Image 1 (cartoon, rainbow, N blue to C red):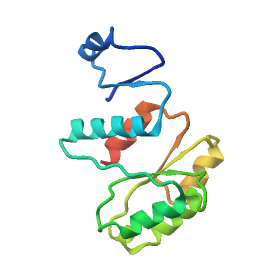
Image 2 (tube, rainbow, N blue to C red):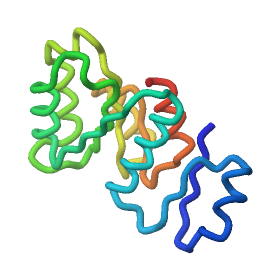
Image 3 (tube, helix red, strand yellow):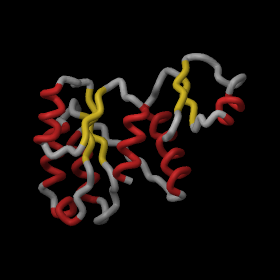
Length: 150
């Protein structure tokens, strides 16, 4: 299990004791994408002894293009925001799943969305996504999914 402390306060006074108690990482609020991706990269690299590359896309069309232009097997896991401009997460997932590279290695696509109702989970699964994570993200759930698929 990975333990991450998210705090709006200075944690420097408790950091050493928290690490001894098993805390892996700290994230200071406000939670920015760059900080979250750096933390996830640290966790992946620390747990697997493999280098982690994390890429982001500004919209669904860019996500599909990055997938299509990457070498086969480049991606191990895709976190897909449902509400993106240009092409939403469902459309981007369909485009990725129809690609030859996806058929060669079925990369898990995980929905990340503020839509947290049961029907939203069903829509994500029907679109071909393996999991659904509602915002605000629960770090334990996020880490559990990463451990399952990586």
